[in-house]
Image (cartoon, rainbow, N blue to C red; front, side, top):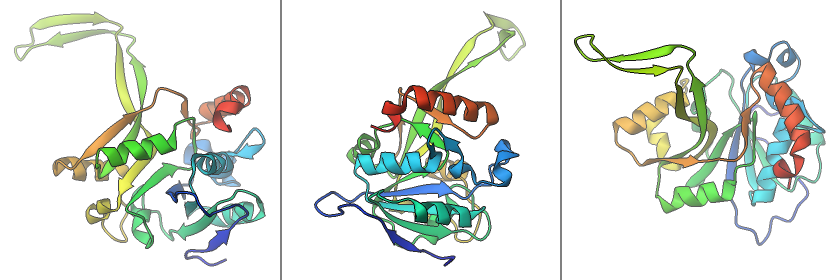
Length: 253
């Protein structure tokens, strides 16, 4: 198998449809899902009748995407083999392989045919987000980066004290709940972000956010209040199997 970019055009009408490009990050080792990921890369973990990677590909096709690049690393041969045996996705699928781990954003430096704006997402996300609306939001704001976010609650099981600079207690909250907007692992980037990404070095999403915000670059949040689950932990993976079957029409319209 070619370790560079390999082109696979599968069945489907690619004419007369607005071309959109998506990149799926599928190179991680999935250590939190051991021992399952000893034999399978995380994006091939099955939920229902499909691995999570195929669910994502079918969603992207339904949303109007035509070009998808899968960034591979760990057990990449299995991903190639599975996609090669899967018919009728109607997508132009290419691969970009990283010989050594490059983090979340570093692999983008290996890709030479990026469009001006493109979707990037982790290959282990189960969500019902509207990808087309996300891209339109990004373009409307003329953003260099748009980060899909989801509201998560953090419950504190203790009484929380607030104090001033003299250690005088000025407020008290009993077992409070704090609300945070967390990254969903689904982004839209302008090609301009490559100016912030070093070549041939590991570079993560956190480092990109530090670099962009330090320069006051136009980075926007896109809030999603539907369904989102990262299947990276055993309990979340088990939950994804149950809820995929329950809400299948939401994930595969």
